[in-house]
Image 1 (spheres, helix red, strand yellow):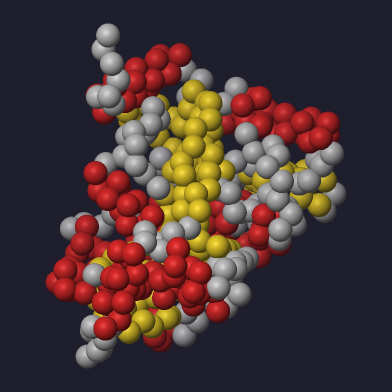
Image 2 (image 1 turned 90 degrees about the vertical axis):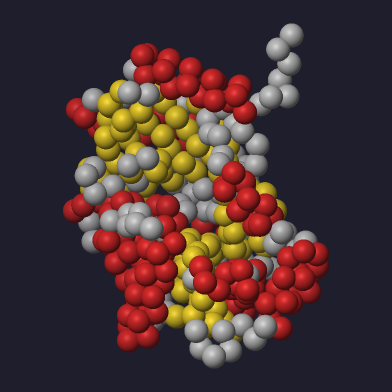
Length: 368
């Protein structure tokens, strides 16, 4: 077997190899790894592909970063908190698959050992190339349990765009249909931006400014924004913009694209118009319909947070946003997360803290 490093591999070559592995998702692409690397500006990218001859065996997006939690500083295998990505492995017979998977996970730990890694987290997205091609079987999805990882789930809401528009509209909540209709009646129009650099320069600058104003600060490195802008210029993403009848842009929705799958990546409203227009109701619906017309099969609205879990306690804002997302209809798909902590003290501190927070939130638990 031969290993090629992400940092030494042209993006086009990396993505060509990714396209050959049915388990690959958008998280394995060069453009998303570049985005994660930009966020993880003080960390080190350790992503690699394993080849057998010229054929890819596995794609492993991986990074090292520093963390500070529970009053303890330590090194972990994440992109500054965003998980590394579960390896996408070529299709193999069952016995060979288990043998190869074991070698890959051993190799990951071997490559991380020099950095004194105390924790690793991996995430696995449900929309793989195999699934999008209609060849999905629910096999090997939680095999990380066999290699000492603990597994937990985050549900995500995904719309099946293969359904006709009338059915998709009927599957939205009555509340959502009403707001989409009302927003249309107020004369809001939707525009799409991709490919044309001159158009993109101005609208992307406005989109960034709206984000900065809404957050009150720069929430991530400028380089990550530049990567998102370049994806628009390369026709690998679309920025949807809602405008008033007199041409004022008041809401922005940036969407990523991978094969026949699209996803809402980043959304922001201009605060001064949000209460009057509630623009996101219409904007996200129009984005879905645009992707449907273009032949995309799925659109991901986003993570569904509702009840406290041992591994994560959602904020009130996250719960509120999730309730909004649910109103579009859609089905719940499982995103799997795998965690392995190598330091006994860190494990004890992490799970003690999580248990305390979980018990605080779940007041329905009897104390008897």
